[in-house]
Image (cartoon, rainbow, N blue to C red; front, side):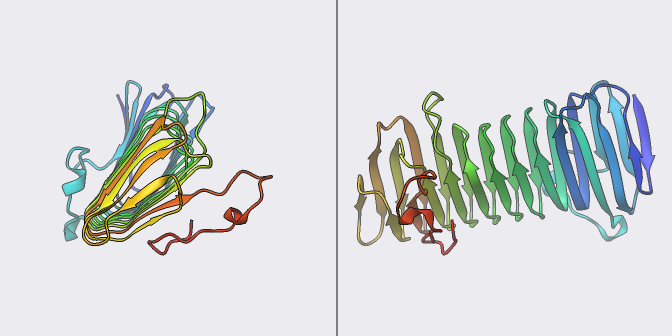
Length: 291
């Protein structure tokens, strides 16, 4: 096992191959980038407080504090005597598995083909161009996933969830009071059918489906409003529980969305370039957000 104790800005280049990356910090920023190189590089450009420990045990590379453990990351409290901040950037081979835990810090993970798991207390998380399975959890930070093609699982308490150009076959997201905006790319006709399952207590849910859409739809809200842009779907209920149900296309995929007091909007994604019509302009959802 090789270990470095970092107390000032530094760059490190571990010599051994890396198949798993673990990063855990308090305040600041974590940037993880997948590359086509065979080696890993670590840059700590800012650091305040206790030292960060960078270690390599076999093929596992870890950047963390001694007192910050993965299992307790969502319950960790920063006591005054432990004031700290760090800006960490790590470049790793794209096929590695990545675990990022942040308390009060922003996390950005890009270009990873292996498994990605992110846990955060506060601070926003951005996931870009990931093709492996993804699991993201946050207490109050917002989560944004763009061009993610792997199976996506998201859980937040108050943080908003935004999925842009979602092309994965599986998206499952749950929030308590956070809003959800889900923009789905046209499905691969030869790929597996999409399985989209969304649930919120008081958050609003807006889903923009590709054209043509191909799914069985079940969406409902107990006390919120509904908006539906598809003639083939049926809207039921005037007071109390409202639902939108039906089949789009051949119904290969599944879309289920529920919220207790939030509104639900089912929107039509703009058609591909070359088609005509007003759908090419931005659309405002029932949540007031432009898609």
